[in-house]
Amino acid sequence: MYPRAVHPIKTTILSATLLLGLLSRLGAVEATLMQDISVSSAPSATKPLGNAPILRVSETDTTFLYFDIQSVLPEGTTAQQIGKATLRIWLHRVEQPGMCGVFAVTNSWDENFFLHDPPSIGALVALGQGGRSQKFAVFDVTDLVRSWLSGTPNRGMALSSDVPFVSTDDPLPPPLKARIDSKENTGTGHLPVLQIALVSGT
Image 1 (cartoon, rainbow, N blue to C red):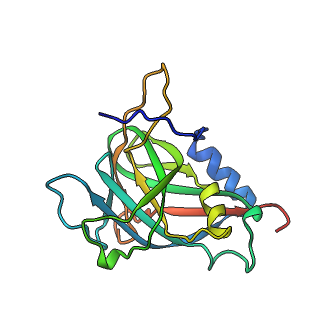
Image 2 (image 1 turned 180 degrees about the vertical axis):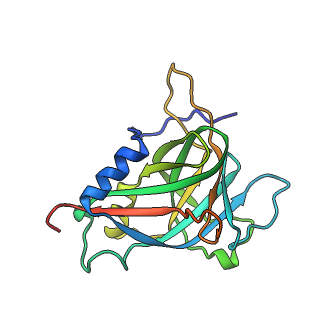
């Protein structure tokens, strides 16, 4: 059953076009995607591979992403100087449109030495929706990036559709089930992107 636990996040879902246009005007930089891998909790799951061209997101498939933010930010950048941070993923194939969450990852991992047991996942930090194949989905991860600059170690982030939602009388959106391009994908090549915009004058 899709989880219905209460969580504290309030979300505003913007269109990819609107949000990317805003970031462009703010002069956003793109962090380097260093590692990405998917792991499944399904009983029939095979060993995850760090060089797989496709990453999976669903209730049973979690994608882990690690971005190097320090190399693209000016030296000494503080959390208060981060105006907006946005994760953008390309939905290579959507099998079921729906909601997906971004979670903080709380311990170190390496895609080249990844076993069936995934790293620990912490708090839910963002929500977003995926609709159609060959479209972008965007997530506001500003608070997560700010936390990395405030002393929380950057262990990356996790994408999963196994998301707790606030209790509501409205019908809950279904969980997203989709495939996205990895950094090793040499076909369409739309790897996940983390864009960071600094506040004006920084």
